[in-house]
Image (cartoon, rainbow over the protein chains, first blue to last red):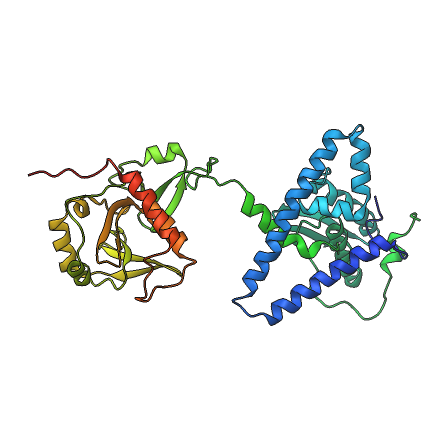
Amino acid sequence: MPDLLFEAPLVSPDEARLRERGARLERLLDELHGSVGPSAWPRVEALVTTLVELYEGGITRLVEHARAAAVDRDALDARLTGDEWVAGLLALHGLHPVPLEVRVTRALDEVHRAALTAGCKVELVAIERGAITLRLTHDSGASTSIARSLAAVAARAVEQVAPEVAVVDVQGLPATPPAATSFVSVERLVSGGRR
Amino acid sequence: MNALAPLSRFALAARRASAPPTCELCAAPLSDAHRHVVDREGRALLCACPCCALLFTDATRGKFRTVPERVRSDPWWTMTEERWRALGIPVKLAFIVYPSHLKRWVALLPGPAGVTEAEINPVAWAAVLRESPLAASVERDVEALLVRGQRDGSFECFAAPVDVCYELTAVTRSMARGPDGGIDGGVAVDAFFARLSARGAGAELGRHS
């Protein structure tokens, strides 16, 4: 599986195109929402939903055909899930072979190890349709800036593997703003022992 | 952030839209053609599975009553222009119901924005109930007197299930209003009434002397 925590410094043209499209989609939705007015916006949303419905139906059938005809189901699944673009689409449409909870738990395992070294713990609290809730707990000695950074990393890790989930909410963030001094880069914390 | 994340809420909406309907009383799966139960307190129409529909059929007390399936007409009585004007309903297509929570008869007018509620003249309605066995046979909450006035001044009247009347409002929702401000024509409405007539055929009220 691709590195869950950080975007690779060099992305393939495909990955770059995927990210660019995703960013453009978000920008367009924001711009339209701001400019079309309250009576037209529901129709914009209906338009996008209808398009998604059409492609969801098509992709679902496509995957069914491929799985039915595949000589080696595991090899097919490995291919599909190893391709970021395809894996994302499968997840979005409920077709990913790895259940949502497993994907999220695996992503959090990676963060968990790093969190422990900083005196923090990140747990999965709830998965409900449309929203995932995490909880961050930290020792009194743990730095609040690190806790916040870890919360952000955890949320990003979960978002990366679960595009079908609209909201990732992290509870337990320290209330006080982070101290301006003593910054420790999260990379340094996490990369210990990894490549 | 996954590049596809902006699509997540649309995918969710798409999934919900295609999720199979379930009974609103017991969550059993439903087929597309299903019965409805009226919640007399909330004036809601609930989708119901055959078991729940059976349970609340002919229920005389309590919150729920199943909408019956009969469509009836009366060849010996029809609405007239004077009677319609006396009722005070401003348009030519309406269904008259008795919702328990309102404790009176009201007219529901299908239109482009959905359904509009209108008061009817109670004296005029009492007269209709005296004259018309069809109107008198309309059950409270679950049925309606459905009336459609034609351009030639004639009227079509049915005692119809209230869920069928709401199906009509789905048809009229996308139509423009006619010159008199009401929805009375249109191919879709004609087709609806043709189907209704076919359903009601053979279920005409008898005349007792």
